[in-house]
Length: 293
Image (tube, rainbow, N blue to C red; front, side, top):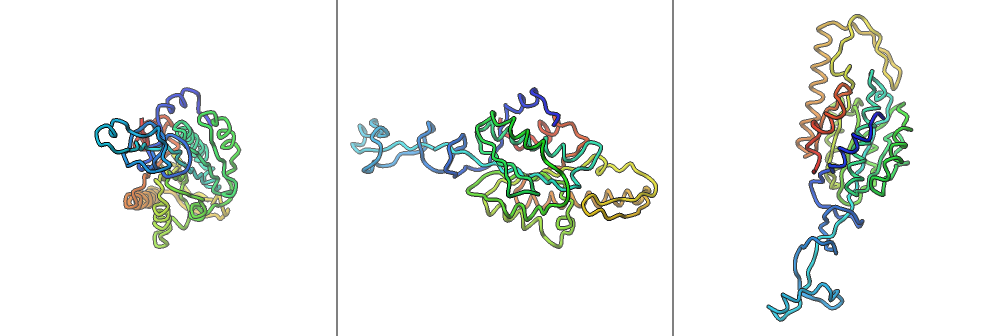
């Protein structure tokens, strides 16, 4: 991954915006709906036997002649789940989609760790072997090494990978993929809608990062070509002229527009991330809505 110390230094000023309070039984920097012992005041309630007498508000006792306990918002650790599509189609492009996917995963992992969240990285082709990054920014070398070792080959089932997530309580789920699967390309299957409904049901803030190669977004090839499917090795002979390129670009636009509409309906964040876009612009401008400062 071509990310330097200056990049991560800028990232250290950001953290992921959760959009809701967490309810995990873990200690961290997120405000939970549970009451605890952090320093942010929440409410009063009457004293009950067994309460810590150190939390009695003596000023309230002086005014009301009754014992009241101060309650505080407990800070909790959020879980950030990052799923990376490691299918063969992600290994395409002069600047490979796989490299951009790993850079995006590194950036969001770092932001999660910087906010003392619990980050879990998933290879969609090996969902049974997640990488749990804990311990704040000190975990950066370990998850960077994990990302470097990813192999992009074969096929993955995105919907099945999401369905197998062990989610407990609220959190953030980030999907990084080109979504070039038949299940997503054919709207009548409603795979995308079902996946988004599932994640909403599991109380997740949903982020879809649609990684596409510069060459996929702007076709510059011409003439008769043999196109080879990177996953099943099937071939298709096509003639690339102005008309066929326009038809392709129209279909691609309809595909991304459909995903965007469904994400809007589900309250999910969606962005097309091109390998032709500078990573600094992607992270610090195009995806700005995802962060707190």
